[in-house]
Length: 262
Length: 273
Ligand SMILES: Nc1ncnc2c1ncn2[C@@H]1O[C@H](COP(=O)(O)OP(=O)(O)O)[C@@H](O)[C@H]1O
Ligand SMILES: [Mg+2]
Image: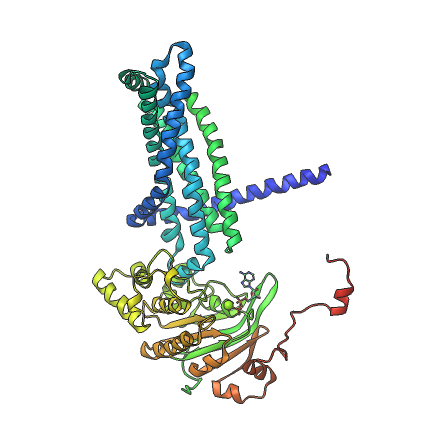
């Protein structure tokens, strides 16, 4: 293959990607004033939180339980070599609250609710519903886009907390029921070892950032979609891919800062 | 039905030019819509009928010329004034554009909820009134997906008149309807126009249906008005373009072929690029 063509193709892709990021940022700037207006009509936001929450809750609970149980099995297997299995509760709690809860929840949310948000807004565009609103003198940004953005942003941290809580319960069941650890030790190690200000807040900050980014990508892709069925399906795929990459990339950056204490 | 054309105009399009991707859609388009009339704008697919409605509704801005609605020049209006003007215009989209996550009742209530602070009891009354006018009071709990094409168009019509607008624009209101639904919609357009004291602009390619209710007809072709008059005038005229359209002839002054290089040259050219 011709290396010059390859390099110029690469350059084109990078430029297109940066252009897209710029468009998304301009869109966010336009969305900002609409966010306040949408908050004034809390009912719409609550409705959307309910819809996206319901979409994602079951999958978050089931995944959380399994991840917790797997962590217990794997963690025990390692800790027992150093005769440190009494720290299993602490290990599980730290892994979940600091890392796995926020990250896996955001990934699950992007795949389940984020893609649905994109498809919904894209289809509203394709079926002239957004144009129709404009003609009825209703701005779709505060009416349609902003409530969905808020809902995603708020739902992700809540779901991440549920994920971690369910995961810890799952780990407890395996540790006490299957591996024969002492329940009191499991909890007390966790209680003395997990710091609210560092571990819990750190995880919360992460999931707030992820919620913002995933919701932003999802509503932008939907609003920017070509108004055809093919355009909407492409936009949906892009939401999942871009969100997943953004979540993992941002997680690395935030973890690096947090572990060094800024 | 023969309203004089000198009646005060509600919409005036003057020397309008508009292009899309350097392809001219309109050049020197002039037309007026008299207050209180049902004005039909007839043209083949792709002549820019939908585009014209978007220009009147201020969703697109003209490249040259002006569009005036109720004394305001639409193209340059700031968003706030444009929205104020749009509250007084209803629009029926080709695809109905009903909100799929709301039922029929809430779709009709939507503009009222967005733009007024009427108490719930009053909204309830108003919505039922509008639905009664289009004969769909009994369908209030259905969702758009459960409606037939004719029904969703009637719901969209009820929604378009929700705020008692001064004018309603219809984008191909008869397309894809069975003869009965079509008759219903035809009759509704005229009746609502007169009962609610509105002005109606009907954009369509269904000549026969439109001529039964229109006060005045414009025939669009190649970016401008090629004929105009009352439906009776249009039937009498000898102009070949008009005869072609009114008679539904496939070829004539309005070409059947999309512009292309000569057929033989095209066949002889091996390379597609
Ligand atoms: N969004 C658009 N971008 C580019 N061209 C368009 C767009 N919408 C319509 N057109 C073109 O403009 C012309 C007029 O379109 P339209 O107003 O939809 O015609 P009509 O409603 O009379 O069928 C068509 O040739 C169409 O291809
Ligand atoms: Mg059209």
